[in-house]
Image 1: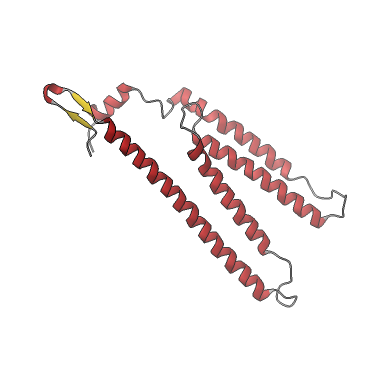
Image 2 (image 1 turned 60 degrees about the horizontal axis):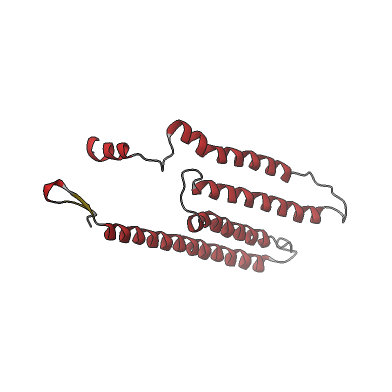
Length: 188
C-alpha cells in the first residue's frame, strides 16, 4: 500500500487515513504477538511442571530419593518466570515511547525489582528451614543482590542520558537525517 503519492506538478500527497490504518494494524499485530508469546511460555511451563510433579510422584519414597518436595522450587521458578514475562510486557501496554525514558528502561527496572523480591523470598524460606525459630544463623546474602541490582539500576537509568548525550537518542530523528536516508544513501 502506498502512503505517499507524487501528484501532477510535483505535489506530495500523504494518505493520512491509510497511514493511520497501517499504524493501527501494526499495534494489533504486536498485541497478538505478545499474547501468543505469553501463552506459549505459559503452556511450556505448565507442561514442565506436570512432568516434574509426575516424576516426583513416581519417585516419592524414602527408598528412591526422599520425600522433600523439590518440585515446589520448579513451580516457584515457573511462577517467577511468568511474572517476569508479564513485567517485561507491561511497559509496552502502559507506557508511550519517549526519548527521555525509553520503555526498555522500565522493563529492566521492573525485572531488577523482581530479582530482589525473589532473592529475599528464597532467603526467608531457606532461613526458616535451616535455623531454629527466632535465630538468624544464615549469611545475609540477599543484601549483595540488592546492592548490585541498585547499582545496575543506576547504570540503566543513566544510559539513555549518557548515550543520548554522545550519540543522540535513537527516537530523536531529524528531517535532515530522514532525507539523507531516503534520497542520498546508496541502495544495497
